[in-house]
Length: 395
Ligand SMILES: *Cc1c(COP(=O)(O)O)cnc(C)c1O
Image (cartoon, rainbow, N blue to C red; front, side):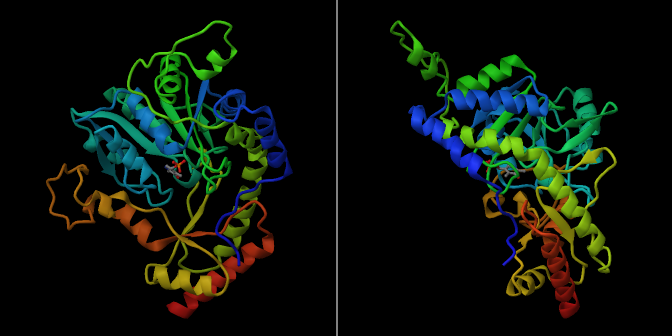
């Protein structure tokens, strides 16, 4: 069986968890602090704050830029559901814009018609690792006084050409970027997340909020020679990362350049082999982007049945996944407030939206092919042959 994804962990990670386990300091402590510093350096950000996962990272990021009840946030429906959910955690309404078919990312040309007096921020996504068009998105945001939060959950190690220079995603190029360390991403800590920003005030807020808004963290009280009573200065959360996770993350971070290189190599092979199958659409990588290829998404010919193709491949030992979901088609969004650029003035059937045609088409016609560090060239060829057989069998 060829799995669709598989984390790359080794002896180094096993050795690393011995440090917190033998020291006795297992929750957020020195390993987290070191991981934050190394991560900030890696992406070129001033500040990095570790949290429990990317979903809570997005919650804190939107809170920091002032998103609250009654506000609107422009984002994509075509993303993992956590993107839109984070907007709702703030009591705000997600306003969905469609994607570009080639990159599966937010179409910048559709942002302006979606802006209203209530719009506070743009929450853009670097979907499956492909950088979105930040140059255009940030320019529109600045013109309208909106904050830009980057959902960079899957984008560790991806790069963007910025003012003539290749830079890693997470610098950030918007105001705040949020990363995930779930096992489906390149770098994993089991679960985990990171928030990067160049704004020291926001970074202070993240550190406060992730630990119950406690005035004096336990790391400080632990080392103090005088008794300290802490206070809880505003509503906070328990969004901490543990030192056990951070120890793994520090080792994983060292592997990222090799992970990206291997994926880019395997994707090249996929592209060559797949170009021989008629009707299969390959993802576009703009000249200003270098994807880490967290996932490799291909479009099936219009006539092919997605489920049948996936089942045919699974029966022959090749695991695939349906491409990225659409939040507006999920039951959790059936009764709940979300808007498109028509602001509810449309008569679309529930679970569909004519303003989100490309998002829906991508979900219905694209699949994720296997891609992981230890995948061999022969396995790539086998996947392509199986896909080819599936398409001839079904069309
Ligand atoms: C994985 C992912 C998330 C959620 O990350 P968690 O760390 O699991 O909370 C959010 N957005 C996108 C685009 C993702 O790919």
